[in-house]
Amino acid sequence: MKRIPVAAVLAAISLSACISTPLAPGAEQVKITRVAADVSSCKALGNLDLDAAAAGIDNARNHAIGLGGNTVLDTTPTSIYGTSMLLRTGVIYRCDPAGSPASK
Image 1 (tube, rainbow, N blue to C red):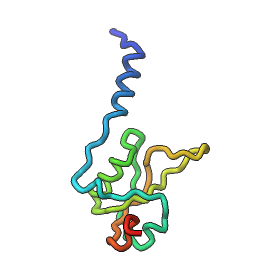
Image 2 (cartoon, rainbow, N blue to C red):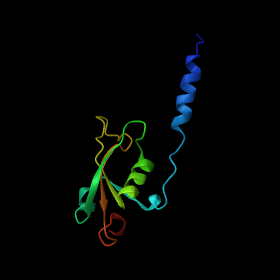
Image 3 (cartoon, one colour):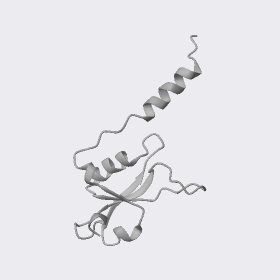
Image 4 (cartoon, rainbow, N blue to C red):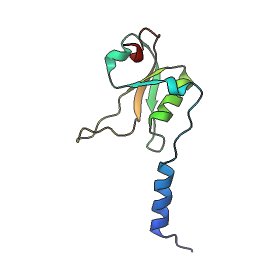
């Protein structure tokens, strides 16, 4: 059995982490917020629950577009040090232009 050096495996993993997810058409317009008041007048469309490999803003935006949403409320817990992990959990909303976080 051929052995693969650990350094080669680690290099491949770190390189794959740098590759970004292509955005679906319109996904760049999806707003991300952690403020619940931003979505108080919006319609909830579904929950977002990404695994660690798919976590991130681009995947969240793509999922929102898939459900017809334009805003994601990020509910990913913060660490004990106060920093956020990659966006993994949230709620996808459809907000009218007057109620979207960008217009406030």
